[in-house]
Image (cartoon, rainbow, N blue to C red):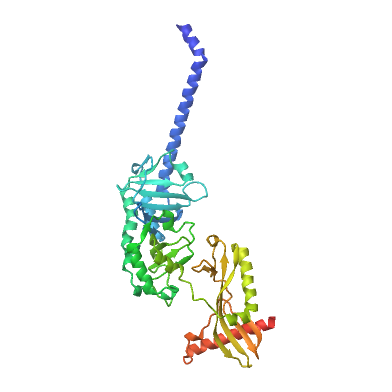
Length: 447
C-alpha cells in the first residue's frame, strides 16, 4: 500500500493535476481581486466625481420609433452640476449591481467627464433611466474596460438620482415643446422679421402651424438632437419670439431654429433657448422651400450697363472663381445675378458718379462638399453667393471712365430708402459720397 502511494506521488500526471489546480486557484484569486478592485474603482469614481471633472452634462428624453421630437437639457450652470455630483456622490454599495445591459430607457443623462480613468483622454458615461426607475450605465470603451466585467454593465437602484434626471426634462417640456409652439405660433410673435430674409412673418407662421399638423415626422437620432451630426445645413433662419431686436437677440431668448440641407423637403425645427431645446425633423415641401429660398433676391441685370463695364467686372469674378476653387473645390464658372444702377450724382469737378448693385454667384460642381465660411451661402439653386466685392462705383466725365472701385461688403447704400429732408438721411448720403469719393480717388491713384 505504501509502495503504491509512493509510486502515485511520483507519477507525472499527479503533479500536472496539482499544477493545474494551483494555477486555477491563482487565476480565480486574481480575477476575484481584479473584480474587487474594479468594483471599488467604479464606486470610488461615483463617490468622488466633482463638478469640475464633468466637462459637459446633458439630459434628454428617449424616443420610440413613433416619435421625432426630443428635448435636450444642457446642465451649464454650476449649481446644476453641484446638485448632480452631490447625488452621484451619495450612491452606496447597496445601490449598485452588475448585470447585462438592456434596450431602451425613458430618459438619458449624458456625462462627458475628464477624469473617469487614469488616462488623459475624456471618458463618456450615459445613465439610462428605465421605466421602473432603475438605471444602467453605458461607457466608452476605455472606461468600460476599467469598470465592467465582459458583457455586463453597472446598474443603479437609486430613486433620488433617477427622479432628478427625468425631472430635468419634464420640468422644461411644457416650456420648449416644439410641436406645441409650432401649432400656436402667430406672425405677430416674431420680433426679428428683418432676419427672416425674403420670408414674410405671416407665411412662415402659417407654414409652421400646418407643418406641425400635417407633415410627416421622421426619426431623430440622439446625435441629431445634440446637433452633432455630419449633416450640412446650408440654409437656416432663426425667428425669435423674445428679446430686444434693437439691442440684439441672444441665445437666451426663446426662439425657433429652422434649417435644411440639400436633401429635398427634409427640415429640422428646434424651439427653446440656450441649454434647453426641443427638436423635430419632418418632411414638408412648403417649409423646406421657404427656408431654402430665404436669401434669394430678384435677379436683375441691365444688359446695356453690364456690357459697358464688363471689362472691369469680369476680372473681379474670375479672380474670385480662381481663389475659391483653390480653397473649396471645383467650380464650373460664375453667373452675374444682379447689375443695376441704384444712384448717381454730379460731383464738384463736373464728373458723374454712378453706383451699381453688383452681385454674382459661383457654380459649384459638388455643392454637398462645400464648407462655408464667413458670409458665404448657397442660394436656392445651390449656387455659391456672398463672395462679391460689394457695390460698384464708377466716375465718368465727358463720356469717359475716369476711375472705378468695388466698395466692399461693409458698404451698402440705396437712396430709395432715405429722405431728402430728414437730417439723418442727409448725413447718411453725405457719408456715402465721402466713402465713394475716397475709394475712387484711391483707385485712380493706384491706376
